[in-house]
Length: 353
Image (cartoon, rainbow, N blue to C red; front, side, top):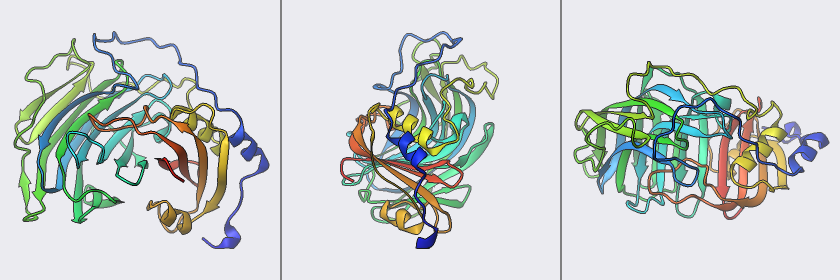
């Protein structure tokens, strides 16, 4: 984008961005009966299968996402996804890819959305939004490493995004669900599990040695459970349901957690959701194209204008998606990248600007 087209946001938007960020009050819900174990921001719940392997350079799963109810209480979320972990068991470096549903924001404004995220040494926690996702459908997700430390993500054979700066070998593959509320209702499947090794680059069927799931469903016990349908290639995960729920559970209620159409309001809500209700220092607000994409190491596209908002604060990261066993990311710098329609493309949390 040429310099002549770059523009600053209006004074009114800047004023909105710099006002105090207040957390949103939870909305009352008609609720599903919570199971004995609770899911919280600090302790997410997972239903997944896992396979440890030290030399994987590719992973694939046919993900089917069906029931996906998320209560509208301050942007709870649920995912249906695949993880690639590089340093099991510490889970400090990883890439994940799948469907996410936030009660309100940041991706999708309450609707299911494709997303990917990563935590990498020397970089930061980052999430990217990849467009609307339809329930009751299946999509083949593939993550593969074309060169050491670089992973490309594909959906149904089409390139989605690239993550760089990862370690050169894996420690564990996972597939399943992640939820932050005991009232989430989830049902998903992962079939045709495949992988390839760095040694021979040949795709093989099956994740041979899962360390879980539980052997039997426990619909009234822990919030989530998993079952092998055809071990080691097909599995099913459910949360807070006895398995008789029809596919396509209701969406989150409209509620007051929805951000308005203004970038200023979305920035305030996302910053508060990310753990800092007082992140009032806006270091820069600007519009640009390829320059911002290159500097932020994101591939939002070279032919689109983007609005970049950078905030200083004390962000805890407890409400961010992460693999099982990973500690919450924290940082002092939050970068948000929006497209021209005001939809979030990238959210990046770092300790340094």
